[in-house]
Length: 301
Image (cartoon, rainbow, N blue to C red):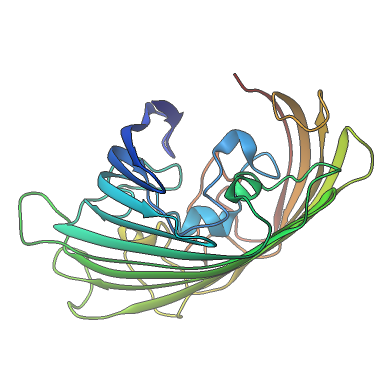
């Protein structure tokens, strides 16, 4: 079980699940993070900076209740899930919702390297073997027909490439989301919103204890105004962020104890974007550029 703080500052259960293993296949049942998002896959204490990017939070798949099967044939890993929808159980980025159903698939191919554990966290200490993988993910959900579910149809998709090496790491990710709201959102039913997100990040160890990193991310909305309940913001403009900083590892090669400091500069106004304000992402209401300087101490057990 894992607990966390949501976008509103409330302490809630983030994940609670059980796993069954059958050789190279596993089954997970409970509340868990949906597969498909490479940047948000590591837990918050293992992120490259103090937290995920504003783009990651905007397109956050969140945690949901359901069942997930993972198949690992050779250099492939295929994750499939049936759940209550994106962010239905927990989200650090914005309002949660529930769907009648959601189907998720995430297919990964390991091109270099012999172990999936190389991609469990972005940092790659000196001495690590070179590893490279590609990923394609998608979630389709529909709601509004049963109980208190949201009248939303969502298609979420991602493509990523991730590399780890001898003291260095890199990640590139493209996210697409099409949202079709039904009744109750203050806009014409059947109107669609097509949004894109980009995340590029990389890091490298300059000593056995110190890693420096840089990240660029961008949210590209489709230009139509919307209800804030759909994406967290009502604007139509892009939102670009650059983040740089360093990690100090108490024990080389281990994330047991880590000190992180980063500087985040946001080029664009939050008030004219679809990016929601959040203490977690460091984004505040602003009609122009803004910046944040953050520091964090992590102790993992």
